[in-house]
Image (cartoon, rainbow, N blue to C red; front, side, top):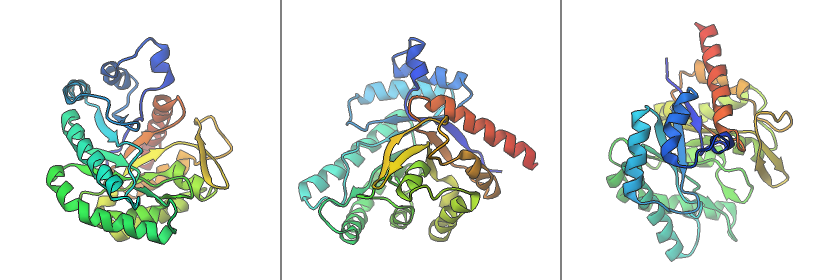
Length: 287
């Protein structure tokens, strides 16, 4: 049976309310809540020394918490400007250095947005550039690190689940990040049953084979409008979804070993624990 890990993206509001402030305090705090995973975001850029990253990574290892990293939001492999393309490659290359410093293995990134191009033009440019870039990055990634392009929640962003899975066929070092809140927001609430989740995993198994079993997952409930994602919510929301209860049996039936990161608004750790509890209870009932 696969082993699924659960944890928050960043620190919950309760972490700060309890008087904590440093990421060095996070591993113990996360561990005490029965979680196994943590995602550190460099969304606004790399504002940390690699020396600090090593210290943080050692602390997470001490508490047996797996880390992943989110790359800067500025990445766009469909930007027609060659200088901006070079910067996107640089953001990934720098991120790989931080992966190694942390002792982490996965870096999530937003691959592209349309800009003034048609969607087809943007997808083609993004794909061509990743094909060009990946051989160099593969040398740095080695055999155990992954870059994880993420499904996106807004209509002008590249990142439907099929676009992301197709992108991952370029290299074995690419692993899909299925952000089910984004997928649900982009498709105006399409994730309503286990079959809706199965459709995504089935396509991934068809294209990527067993790499699908270790996919990265982001899960949160997200408010959406006509253009997709508006804002992240908490599990208290009963309007927008998606519901983890609709995913949990698929995780078990497909024998998945995914990393599941919660991106709820302020309650990431609490909602991660809710997911883990649901998963373990459902798993016990399956046996």
